[in-house]
Image (cartoon, rainbow, N blue to C red):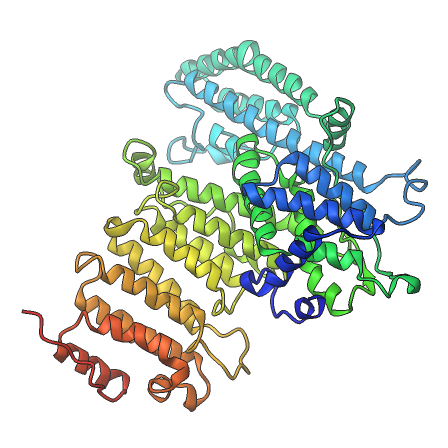
Length: 580
């Protein structure tokens, strides 16, 4: 079983990794040597989680307890901790700093909202131009207004106070003489309200709330002392060789990694991780690195990912990956997952939520129409160079399926949201041809909208999928998307839409889409023998051919013949009686 697993082509391969499920069944079916009790304990905990479809905090603690016995830490780790800055302390400092900065931003934003209420004429809201105030730019060297403050990231609350005082001082400096008396009086009045009320309260709230923010490590220590159990990631280790006297028995490390790579286990780990990112981090406005569970879940998924390589060498070597609290050039994946890209996934969730709210008349639709076109919160270029992060690709796929579900998005908002997730996926997996589990889940989510799906949204989905079919990750690839899961699943989606009638997919649109699909798969193929008209009658193409034939039954005989002539295939005897 280890040999089969080591030869598996992909990570998180669904049914292709059922070898791991069989290993779990074997371990749970009979007595094991005493040395293998930690592996048995791990198998039992994971089996309990799979049965209920969720992994709890206490089960994560049990999983890590078993893994610490299976993957012993580096010798001397404990003795080397005293008297120097460790990864834990660096992590705590960085988390503390980011949370304090986030709190400061929120406090200043709320205070500026109070300043707007104290300025009914909006004198200090927008930048002052020479058109409004002649000669202003010559007299005032450093202009300031509330809008500028909103877009400034302040390091301290005192820095913000200095800008507020500068704003009022500029007003008094420019508005001299009798003509400026009212403006000077208004600046002094608002400054008094600011000093006596707004700034005093903002400073007090900020100091009280920032005092509550403890480094993540301190929070975990308190949890441990209170008996609730701290979810601490495993200590990373360098690659180790297995002891020679143990080589006659199966490697415990390889067995443990196979248990973690069981597709049912992977599913609940990814599900828990996505929920934590989507709910906990967004609601608390914190980063994944400060979450009590996310670092550990990412590390467990990394261990599962290593199972393929570990089994390929029959468990003769092993290592525990770095969780990524700080940058590690030797093992950068953990840092990239935890500190660089999972925060971007949170922002994608926020983008989807904002797209949803700006499509609702009673929410933010009116505000969105009155403002300039909203730009993306993150540059899509930031998703580049992520092809090797398979775990992150699975998370983005799961997130995309989630936002496509009715209720999590609206038919109107999907027009904006779908391309953002699709672009991120194109960076992880330029070749999306064999992502069958993802395609099946995505189709199920999309078709639940039924005939409520707008034509504009349908058009975005079609154009995105055609892009997946055309794309080739390597110029030297001999095989394209002709026989791919992407091709077959896309036809299934079109068939589902066609079954809803002409309202969603009229005949003319069906002809256009199927023609474009043929052109897309032909464009992906380099060999003439793999072009559409060459494979139409091959046995290996039967399953996809049957889908085309099923779709063509929605057309008249004349339209069917015209379509076949256009794509260059011979007319079969699959004509049908004309629809009256």
